[in-house]
Amino acid sequence: MNTSATLLPAVVRPSVEDRHWLSADHCAGPVLDLLDALNWAIIDAPEANVHATSPDGRVYVGWLPEDAAAWKRGIVWQVRVQPVEGDAWVQEFGLNTPTEAVAGFLAALAAHSSR
Image (cartoon, rainbow, N blue to C red; front, side, top):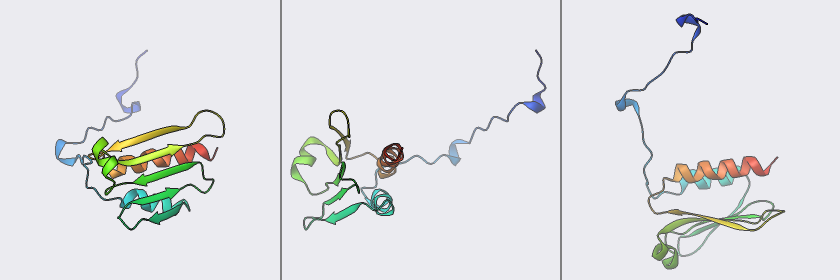
């Protein structure tokens, strides 16, 4: 089978200069903005850590920049999930994980939980 080149989708290859790679900026803004938009309960702790809980109480997100135990383990984000069915699980993100990546993970988690 021959297919005309005009019928095939164009291949887009951005130049190296057009690529923007995420890097850790140690700012919680993208995650906190997402959680606020999703109506999560968000609490700023006096030591500058932030704790958030989903409206159904099944997901906890902690931003732990001042938690010595978290830093000792090399993490700054902790997500704990208690599914309706199945075992609880935890996902932690390291100091150099871009906040946008954590926000993307949480957005996917929130989208899946609303099904």
